[in-house]
Amino acid sequence: MLLALSTWPEIEGQLKKSKAVVIPIGSNEQHGPTGLLGTDWLCPEIIACFAEANAPGGKDMLVGPTFNVGMAQHHLGFPGSISLRPSTMIAAIRDWTVSLAAHGFERIYFLNGHGGNVATIEAAFSEIYSEASWQGRPRGYSMKLRNWWELKGVMSLCNSLFPTGHGSHATPSEIAVTQFGYPDAIKSANYAPRIAPTGPIREAADFRARYADGRMGSDPSQATPEKGEQIVRLAAAALVEEVAAFAVEPDSFAI
Ligand code: NI
Figure 1 (cartoon, rainbow, N blue to C red):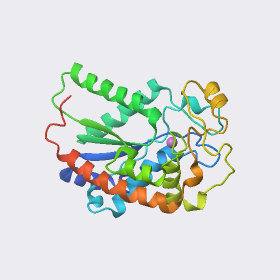
Figure 2 (cartoon, rainbow, N blue to C red):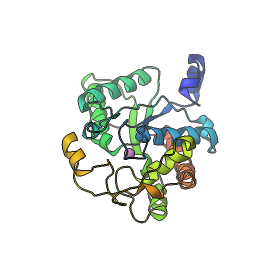
Figure 3 (cartoon, rainbow, N blue to C red):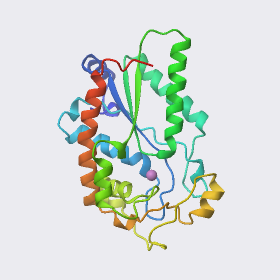
């Protein structure tokens, strides 16, 4: 079930069956010369929507709107990148979560597509739980963060599909997932060097100087829509299973 294509009475009805909601969350940022700017929010959205439409049990899983701008300050040296500062993102995650919780959602599952978001999402969870503690609220909602590449079996599949040149940014895995989702938007380029350099992540000017075309350690030319489909099918099945377990987890209220 997709929240955006539902009415409020339908959501009211869904709440009688499940208190869980999945929020794809990512970033709008450069992904090298061939990766789409939306890659990091498209990947979790593609996986969640494929799961909802096709995986066994997927129709029972509610998928909310995608949180599609994240913490990407280091990519701002490349046109098209958009970033929230961590404090803004924490405030926005808080407002999304508290809005959903006010309607009765008790299990809010963030499916993330951007490593640079992790520290900020976790800080947001701490902020939200702190607010509940200080206000002396009774036991209420719980949140979970899962990076899509950490869903059961996905990283080992990616390692077997791309034993070299996977890297950490503009990876062939994430680009393959977007190629499967949006085959009409596949781009090509001559990569030089074939495998991009690796190193630290600091601010935007340093990132641009270190990683001239935006890639980090990756060779995205290995991506194909067929490989993306394998990743999406595996991730989607694992997602439905994990969300179903989270939805009924007895002690997930614990702070
Ligand atoms: Ni990415």
